[in-house]
Structures are given as structure tokens and as C-alpha cells.
Image 1: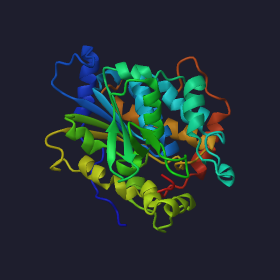
Image 2: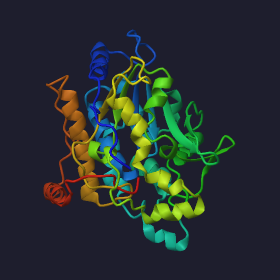
Image 3: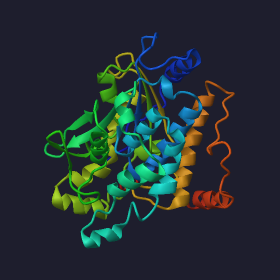
Image 4: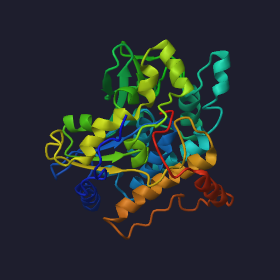
Amino acid sequence: MGDLPEGDLQGDAEVLHALFRRRDSGSRPGARTDGHRIALVVGGGGMRGAYAGGMVWALEQAGLAPAFDVAYGSSAGAFVATALLLGHGYEASRIFPDDMATRAFVDPRRLRTRRPMVSLDHLIDEILVHSKPTDWEALRDSPAPLRVLVTDADDMTPHALGGLTTAADWRLAMRATAAIPLLTGPPVELHGRRWIDGSIGDPLPVARALRDGATHVLVLLTRTVPELRRSDPTGRTPWWARSIDLLAPGLGAMTQDVRRHADSLDLLSDAAHPGRSGSHLFAISPERSAGIRGLTIDVPRVELASRLGHDAAAAVLRTVDPGLVLAHQRSGVPDDPAAPDDFRDALRSTPRRTGSDRPA
């Protein structure tokens, strides 16, 4: 695969200005007067979600969370979007390094005993209950709805789940958006259909948000622009994706092929794209890579990704409000004194040439 189309991925700053106007006027979902429909779209990518977690924390710190009318997320992006809607921005920035970068969540050795390599049980039934409690029923009553992207396991078409009425259904939807056969377990059954990872069918649902009537879309990317634009020059498919292909031919490649982002990148980079129809799009991406992949559990690198995501969002937001003071750590929570050396070590060991990393 060659390079994806060039262009300005950031897009139209009117998206940022509209968010700040709403913040400054005290606008709330369900009581808008500006005629806009502003959507948040959060990309997935497993542990790469740490970038988006940091970005969401910056958005919440800036007072912009109530300015969104709807949020979309695929895979890890659905969990991060949930955090924004429920006011858990700081938790979104911490859950990846604090709770998910462990062998309790990701452990290849489990495959030897025919157990899933990635434990969604640990994420949904332990982390999101005890460490980072999530009130799933609050999503039912949220004035800004969540749209969880999933893929039909039988025909591989993308769908958006929303409007669920019970906590049990929301948990199933979140399990479904992250379900990859072999990696996390079998497809998830909900409302009579079998669902798998949303990023397989629609990794970045920008076009869906526009079809649903969004006039402004803010996109949180979990890869750097060079990672999105270029594929792996070696063409190698990771071992876990090859294993999935043995069970479902073609599925393994779909889970890690950066080409799936091409249509969304076209929308973001081409102001005259016919799919935009006068809408305003803006994307935030990390300035550099932390060297993490979808299943990375190296804590310093995952921590670095969260900080890079927060820094990227903070820098963008300060272009509109230069007086913003956005610290990565919550006020009163000291940084780990050993952390700076860890981050410098991670930065020194992170390759500066970036391409499509694996797995997704």
C-alpha cells in the first residue's frame, strides 16, 4: 500500500470556536440555541486509547465536555467517549497506565490454556467496577447520547448501538465493540445479533456522524499522522492476526490494516470533499509516537502516550484560549518522582521514524 492522501488533517478551527462559544454561554445539551450539532468521534486501537484518554481529560479541564451533542467511539474509543459524557476525563487519562497495562488484562500466555489473550472480563467486571467505577445506567439518561460502533460478525457490516435502557445492555455493547475472536473471546450476542470489534467495520466513524446530521465534528486520533498515512513497509502481518485468519479468513488483516482509515482521512484533509456538505471537521492527533501498539503493557510508554495525548489537545485548545492552564495530573495529585526518568528513557528508545504499527 502506498502513502495515504496528503493534506491538513487538523481541519477547520471553527469546530474549536463553536465549542468555546458554547462553553462561554453556558450552553447545555438539549437546550441549544446556535443551530449546531457538534459530535465527538474517538478512534480506537487498543492500548493506543491512552492518547485519546489524555485528550479527553484536557477537553474536560477546559470545560468543553457539555458542549458536545453526541459522541461516537469504536473499540477503546467507545470507553473513552463514555468517560467524557460521564465526567470521568481524568479517569480516562489514568485507566490505561494504571489499570490496563497489566498482565491481568493482556497476557499472551493465556492462549496456551485456550483462554483469551485480552481479558474483557477484567476490564468490565473488575476495573470498571472497582478501580474506575462506571455508572452505565447514567448513559441511558445522558442528554448527549453515546453511539457505540460494532461490527456484525456474520456480514462484517458496521452498526452503531445506542439508546440502550439497562446497565446490562450497555456492558454488553462495550464488550461487543472490543470483541475480537481469539484475542478477546467469541462474538457478543445482543438483541438477537452477534457483534465484534467496532473498529473492524468502522475504525473512525466521521462519515457516520455527518450522515447523522453533525454540523461540526471533533476527531480524536490515536495514531500520529505519519502512522495513519503510511503502511508497514515490510508488509508483515502480526502472528495474532494470522491466527485469527485461520478462524475467519480476512478478519485478522481487517483488525490491523491502516488502510481502513483512508476514507476518514480523505474527509478530514479535503475541505471540498463531497461528503462534508459544508460541515466543519477538526482532528487532534499526538505530535509524536510513544512507541505503543494495540497490546502494549509497558507502563512508562502507556503513561507517555496519555501525556502526549493531553499535551496535543492542550496545545490545540490554547490556540483559542491562550490562558488555559491544563495540567496532566489532577490538582493535588503529585507526579511519581521516578516518572520523569521513565518518560525520558521511553522517549530516547522510541523510534522517530513511524509507520503503521501493529497490532491495531
